[in-house]
Length: 360
Image 1: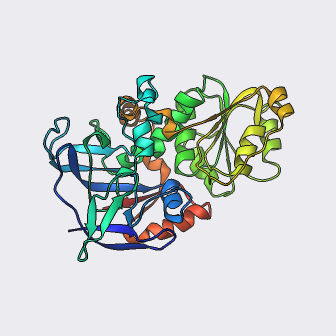
Image 2 (image 1 turned 90 degrees about the horizontal axis):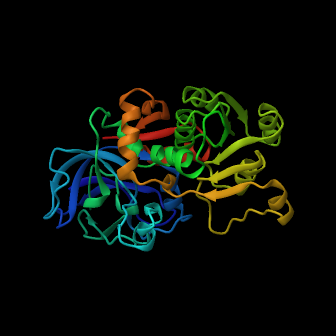
């Protein structure tokens, strides 16, 4: 038996209860979770914005210690500290073959089979995004487990599983920020704060944070923002004022709403680059006129998991953490328990704080 936060139906409150977790089968690993970040994608799964079979255990950003391995697993052993990877690449499909593992056909289209049961009644449970880290322990595919490099605190390392990889990748792989460029980051929750820090690592000259919550100015500046602009009708004008009237070289949107995508796009200079990291609803629409697309000469791109290969990028990020260039704790504003996840969702919807971290 292990305790977990279970989503019994789309839109239903999470229920903290006992679940029965099996021993790992061949090619699987059992992990005792140390910490799990509460990501906006978890909220999107809970409320139906993203599809998820139920009942399910949510949570995809986590770190922990291996307790058991199935037959054939050789890259980790019991006692090893690890980070969970919610989108392990198959290394065999078309996208993996052209070195775009973040678009892996298998990881993005195949819903994981039930992996555990509810304690007492045996109801099958699905692991959200294959990881199910809103639980004291989980069982995952072996390729969803990445050894944690030495020198990185295990608890804070949970953020490397999603927020930090996504923000780092958005800057370095999708937007390809160059030294001295100006960068505007729209939305500075957990992923946005990681994006701000990563822009500074890339050598950006100006890093302008835009958010609806004034309380986030201190958080954003602690992560490296040089300016803070309140979201609203004047946000684009303020960004242009701060960038010599042209707009930012790069805008990175970390919310996933039509209005914030438009803000990021309009705040980008002619010929600049706009990257959308936020995940919106399938029925939402963002409109662009053919004339503005022609006249602006901007590039608009999506970004999946930061366009990262976690096996390649995790050691690079770990070195930044170990050498003091990336403070993971600066992204965390609350340390909570499983029962507090609904309140963390509410704070996220209200635009309060950075990352909430479930600590076991």
